[in-house]
Image (tube, rainbow, N blue to C red; front, side, top):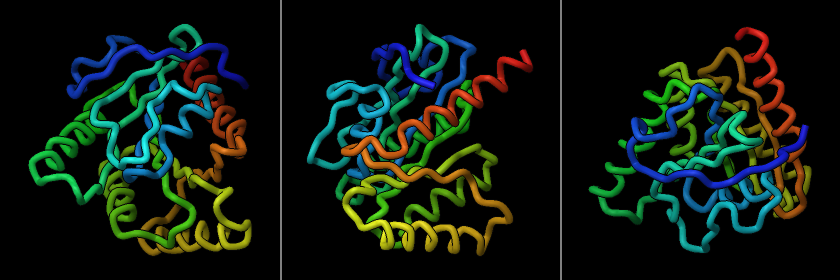
Length: 203
């Protein structure tokens, strides 16, 4: 499937002020500087849909993008685990993130972005475990695949899977992407549209 049109709609820090709709929302989250904005721009085939920055932690709000005239929403969430921020701001961002994830009924699936260049990081594993404990449906997107050779990249992906299987009986869906080369774009969009089709069948 293909995105026909996508446009920015609203930003806020309160999940109760998000768009009053009943359509599916697919949210994207990850540690600061994981390449989230670049991935969103790749999905929308735009260079400026989401603001990219060399400075970590730029996304501080819940950003909604309307897709295909409102058939579904793409949601850009603030990053987690950015230690350079002060305690007060970290707590504020944590409240925004958890508020949206746990309270937003329209959230259909959460995509957790992980930099493929790194071995399993404690902050990522803890966040994934928190999602599991709270029954949040999610998938993992490994980013920046072009920055690492395929063998090394696959080794790190398998390391994450092995770590998760220490506590999980079943793994979530896993995608490998490169915003630079467009790798994984079609697989991601096909996955989203397949869920949308299942939802439409039950309505």
